Length: 116
Image (cartoon, rainbow, N blue to C red):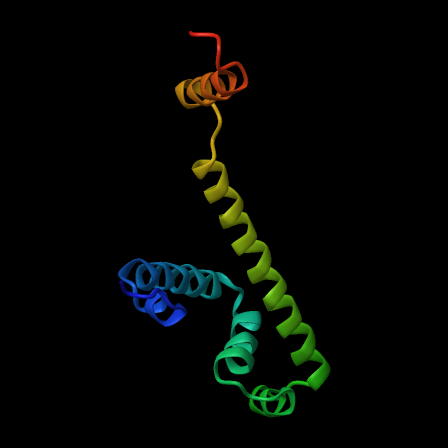
């Protein structure tokens, strides 16, 4: 019997597909940032430049770089949270036939002696 490890899970096709989807979503949200935030975010987060290096490249004060980077991360966080909220609503919608089926199953478990 094969032992499942984190390494095995990371190489699984579904994990790879999930990472690809998440990367695509993140890239799309980064692309949607206003230019002034996207530029700072790319230099700081992707290129891993320091605040001072980024300030020198863009000829801006370090405080502006810090503010724009903070704002870019906040905008990304908000956009991704909205996407997740919509996905959760779709995944866990509780209406119609599905709702009726779940309620019937719960009631059947609560009252096993009663037959529908």
